Image: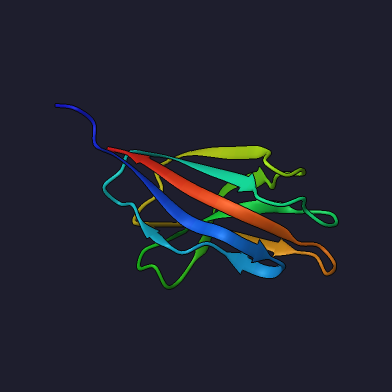
Length: 111
């Protein structure tokens, strides 16, 4: 049997400042996931690490434990590999005051 794969765009051309998060995505069928983040514009200010969050219902969230650096320059790409993540996934970040990043976040899932 061939593996089932899907790519989902969970944040497109979103300007993140303050508390930010991607759209939740139901991924319980997948065995592994990779989240890619690309800066679409030159980021402003100091950027924190983004946090992978998991949820049993797509409403209530907890940190999964994986973090990834947000891209520091335009068109730079960062990624995080995941397994054992349950039903729902999203990426969130607390962007400090005066900082901002415009992102494209894609989620790549494989059964």
